[in-house]
Length: 230
Image 1: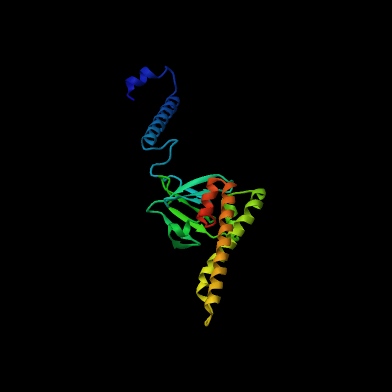
Image 2 (image 1 turned 90 degrees about the vertical axis):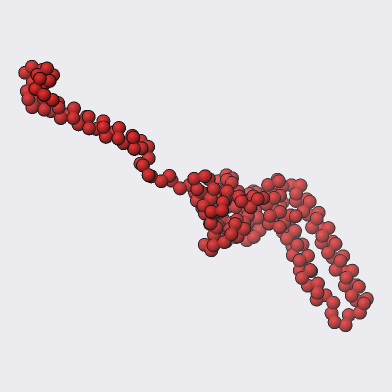
């Protein structure tokens, strides 16, 4: 500021030290304002710092359903809320800390956690086998209470038992005819075996039909995926 401006600006009789203090305050205010303008221009101020990465989104829960196309699955979190998780070609999969595929890591009843990318698809799918019985996994996936489970469990366990009997009968079929058996003995064994399979199949079909009548479509899909229903 030149002398002419000083004479016109400052009140007559103002001490020099007061003038200097005022000039210092004005200078500081100017510099502070300029700094705020630069910060806003470079993404500062109340926004995130320039170059700061967005916070990584994560998910966790129990796999309740697997998408029909094999590219997504539904989880239920600890509060029972459902969330659909999409995967992509870049998604990595692990089961019990071992590298695997979508089919290996994404199974109904497994606990799972991972991170999501900016577009919402999963970057990682890390599953772990719960330390519970297979029947309890099914209950967890169905998300049912004690009363409903008391009705469903006997049917499911009986269906599993019949399926095991039918499978065992098929595996051991080649050993059913002892050496030297007569035609009559072979015929009798065939009749007995076919009769047993027919009765088991009839019971299985009836049980599966009765199960479908008392569950939701979502629960039906889950039971198809775990092999209880067809």
